[in-house]
Length: 401
Image (cartoon, rainbow, N blue to C red; front, top):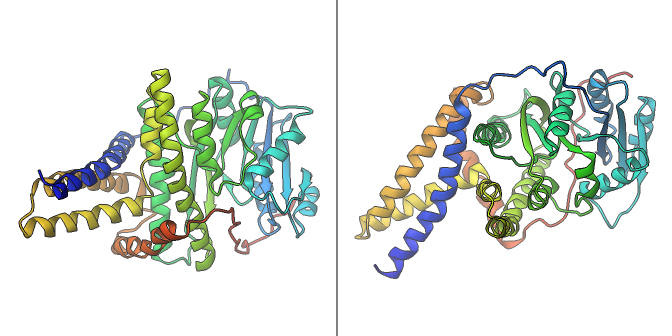
């Protein structure tokens, strides 16, 4: 076997692992999930809803209005107005919620805001802390489901956080919404069915106070949720998925804002892959535990568009090489795994994604993936390192307190 053939097989194996992980998660999620009603004996623990907010005067009122009907008599809402230069704090106070203001232009990012909010809660700590973004809405009974699951299991709990495309959005946003659905609903649901933990997704996260109290929050990582997942898993507090606790956000209409958001998410994911996987595997070997290995495999699945794009380009390159006299075995191996992954995604689309990604929009998928080439090339040349807030669109109506 010559060096080029060895290299070809190495590339095939590197791509086969995430493709198979994705396929297993998708197949496991296809079986229908039956919503389990919470038993009457499931007493709701005392909760604090912690909302980090940086210049969110356009969205914070709507979010507070969405939270209010789900609050229990002993719950409280705390908003961290983080480096705000607008009226966020005043709007929060007008809606009857508590607010603390943080000003630190050097240490910027959601992690620092969460740590500041934790310090404010420490004087009278709740049983459970639920972290929500300032621009999301909640499904029925979401807060109670998260709180009960978290306190019952003594672990962080992650709700089903989905992004929707605005009605006036183009096909690319709908493709992005489907990719988000695969990442934040389908794959964690498959892992739950297999008895495994999931990744945190940034909002709709519930923590028992004893876990939250010691969590490593104070950092400026551009995707703090992924980094926090790895850190918690390393200390034995891997999150559990709660599919019936629905949290929804909306992609920005503005192309520049959407591009900035996508760059932050995907560059951050790739950075966590490179840094977090070795640590998880090390813990798995030292402690002889399966869960960190499964989590490492899950973290090792790149963003869907990147995985599809790289796999297709590699398959084409191997096919050309084989046509010129190279071996066909790597082509057959990668092609077979690719077909399995394609079948898994097709079943997922049929089961979960037909409304999110209509048939007429499917033709936009290849173009969506190709347009991301520059984003991944930018990661190799100049990766994003600092947290950058996504610009908000004007909401359709201002909720009233």
